[in-house]
Structures are given as structure tokens and as C-alpha cells.
Length: 208
Image 1 (spheres, rainbow, N blue to C red):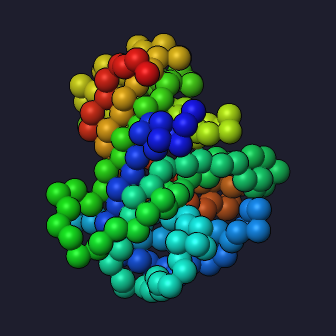
Image 2 (image 1 turned 90 degrees about the vertical axis):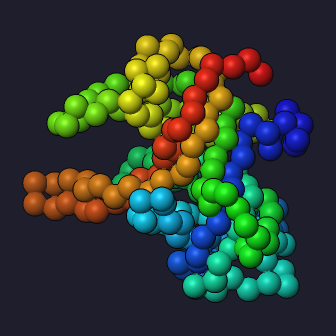
């Protein structure tokens, strides 16, 4: 897969406010990679706080400080991290470019994916009878790697997705959202955690 095709299959745009300053995460081939978070406001005024990863070369000559407005273009990526003696899927927005944060953007949080269903969809209804379908989408990346992106579809999109077989190729559009949940660790101990996923606004079968 060429670099250009890689970009076309996984595209993210975010414009928001820095919530935490960059901290060195890891080094790869002698280059440092930093992590920070940004807050992006929804139309509902709720805020999604999203993880960002950026190479040190993109930070040269600039500072990223808490409260600063930033606009970025990149990709939604996944990686596995060992936690509690098992592998945990981690998600982050990998920055390809910083954009002008003062420009006018119609939507501060957009994602476009081209991938395929790699796990059987899970369809359910809420106590208020709202239809939901959980999907795991695999998006191919260079060097024979893939990103595994959790997606959640609602209403008619959920009905559309529920019977799609594993391997179906999809074009998915939506936004990245953060969601807190409580994980029970034992009878007496629980922990509040944050999940990241694509809230699907548009989904179609495709060939690519």
C-alpha cells in the first residue's frame, strides 16, 4: 500500500483545546514520540477528551501548551499494550500535520475510514429501546500492519450493520468520541476508565 493510499483509508481532522502537555511516550528508530490530549466540544456541548500522538519532528519550533487551540490532520490508530497480564487495545490519533487553528472549519471532529468488519457485529437495544450496533473495523496500514477501530452505529445504521458478515468492506464516516465506564476489578474494587470509538454517522458497503 502506498503512503497516499494509506492516508485515504484513514483520515482524521480535529480542532480543539489542549488538555495536557506533550509527554515522551516512546522512541522508534531514534525519534521520540509524544502524547497529549485535546478537548473537542460536540454540538450537544459535551466534551470529548481525545489522545494524541505526535513525532518530535512536528514539534520542532513550536510549543503545545494547555489551553492552546490546535487543529490537526492525522489517522486514528491502534496498538496493543500489556496491562494486567493481558494485551489491551489502545487507540490514539497520530498527527500527520498541524493546521491553522484560527481558520474556519465546518466540523471540529471528523473521521473517514475504509476497512472491513473483522469481528461479528453486536446488536442490542437500550432500556429506552434505542438500537445500537458495535463494530470492529480493520484498516490496513503500510508495512503489513492494520489498525483495529471500534465503531458504534445507532438507529437505522445499527439495523443496517447487524447482519453484515465478517469481511464486509465498508466506508465509515463519523466522529471520535470518548466515553467513561466503570470496570469491576473484584467484588469490592471498581475503576472508572475511558473508551474511545467512532460514533458512526454514515456507513456504506464499498469496493477498494
